[in-house]
Amino acid sequence: MHTIADLKKGEGGKIIGFLKKERQNTLLELGFIPGALVNVTLIAPLGDPICIEIEGYTISIRKEDAHNILIEPL
Image 1 (cartoon, rainbow, N blue to C red):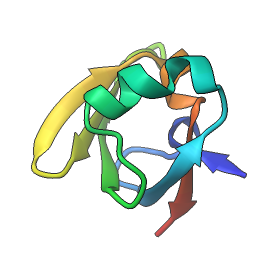
Image 2: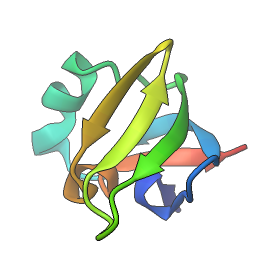
Image 3: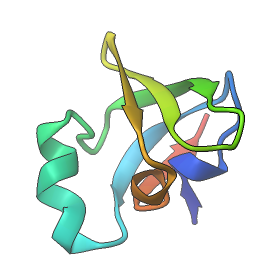
Image 4: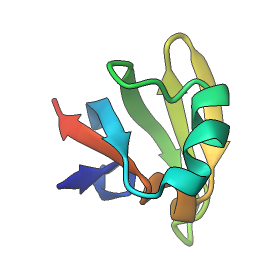
């Protein structure tokens, strides 16, 4: 199983689901919809937060949340 947190800068994937259901609604509201394509654009020097491009916009999320989003690497 791969998560967004496993990606390096410039790598991408397709969202396939979530590990923890309690954060699922928040992530869905932010646009992390299964089937959406994501690409890591920046990673902070200490690894947290991670800047992600998804469906035409850019968002920064905590690494803790990135570990919760399951992807299929591209």
